[in-house]
Image (cartoon, rainbow, N blue to C red):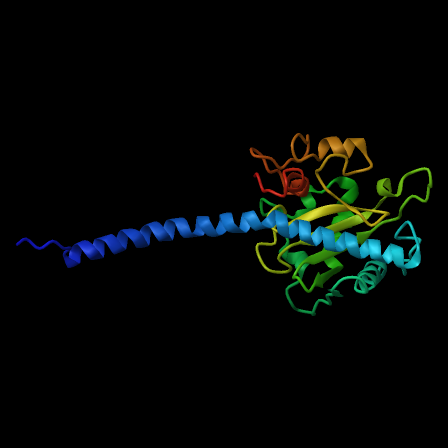
Length: 247
């Protein structure tokens, strides 16, 4: 009677092959899993932020964040006060940076590992920098960088078309990778408390910016299947592709 089996050498070779294949494929699987979670996590963060703003407006019967006194104080304190006001309606706390510690403004980079403000629209670069320095972290681990700006009080303009600042959302908080388009995304804040993803259709009150910063066809910045310029328009890409990362 013949007996069939494997020699020790054959078993060791097989295990070695399995180990090599696993080492090659595991990082890809982990990255794909993380990418698949990006859109839903970002949508959850946006929804939490907008609901908090709506509850704030309803509480005082106001139509705009300004009339609800969401922003009080001078340019150095209004973002902090806004975060503190939000904390009454969502689980978020202002993060105080420790002297000598690693600060978020030093961590965040563009999609291509450059300074994140390099790819910003010229009129937004100051706001982009401010959003890196004034932020709150929610109980869900989302980081919200806040940079409010003056808003038009022209009542002939709908509240959802009155630009009121920039909001940066990092779905991983201060954890890596801290890159635009990977875990960090910029949004335009409007007077009614809603957010529009930078790079989406009509995200800005400027037609020129809408054309130059569009995820699909931007002349300055884009974030599609073929090209990711800086990551600034990737929020629009995610939201206008059913919360999927296509790039």
